[in-house]
Image (tube, rainbow, N blue to C red; front, side):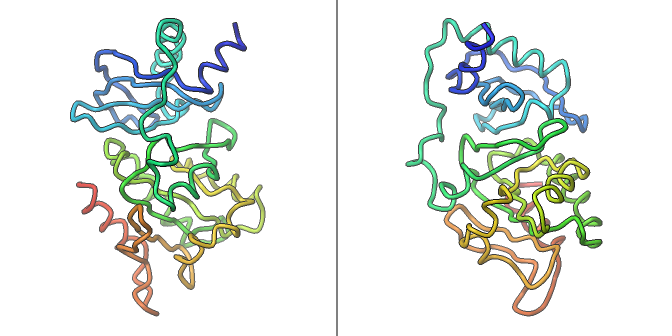
Amino acid sequence: MKTTYLLLLLFGLGSLSLQAREWTNQAGVKIQAELVTVKGAAGNEVAVLKLANGQTYDVALSQLSAEDQEFARTEAVRLAATTPTAAVPGTSSEEFSALGTQLKSKLVAVDGRRVGKYEMSAEPEYYAFYFTASWCPPCRTFTPKLVEFYNQHAQKKSKFEVVMVSRDDSEKSMEEYMKESTMPWPAIAFRHVERLKEVQAYAGKGIPCLVLVDREGKVLSHSYEGSNYVGPTKVMRDLADKVGS
C-alpha cells in the first residue's frame, strides 16, 4: 500500500473534480481554491490549487496548515483508484520556454526541516532571480521583506516565481540560510548554480540583487541600472505592478 501511494504521488493523480474550499498556509493567508492534483514523492508533495478565475498555482504541502495537508493527502489517495493517470497541464517540455526548461529540473526548496528537489508543474509569466547569500547582512535585512511579499501574493503564484541564486560558498550554508529564513520559493540547486550561465548572466556587481525577467529571459527590472545600484526593493515593486497588488 505504501509503495502504491508513493508511485501515485510521484506520477501525479490527474485532474480532480472537487468543490472549492478554504486553504490556509503557514503564514495564515487564506484562499478559496479547488484541489487539482497532488504530485511529488512522499515528504515532498506539491498541491496544485485552482482559483475561481481558472488560474492554478503550486504550493508545497509543508507550507499548508496541518488540516489542509491531511485533507490533500486523503483526497489524493481516495481518488487515485478511480481517476486515470493524466499529464498535468504545463508539465511537458514543449510548454516551457528555453529558460523554464533549463530551470525546472534543477530546483530545490525547503520542505519542513530539509531541502529537497522541487519541480515546477507549469511555467510562470515572470521569474524574479534573487542573488543572495547567508553571509551578507543587507541580504539578511531584505530577505524577510521578500518572504512577506511572496506570501502576500500567494494567489498570484501562476504569474511569477522567485528563484534564489546562491552566492554562498557551500551547499550546507545555502540550505541553512533557506531554512532559517523560511524561504517559500525554490532555489537553483547548489551544484547547478555555476553551470546555469543563462542565469548567471543576470547577476549584478553585488548583492542583494533581484532581477525580474519574463519567461523568454528579457530583463524587465534590475537592482542595477547601469553601474548605479538602485536595490531590490524597486524590483519588488515592479513585480507587484506586473502581477497586480
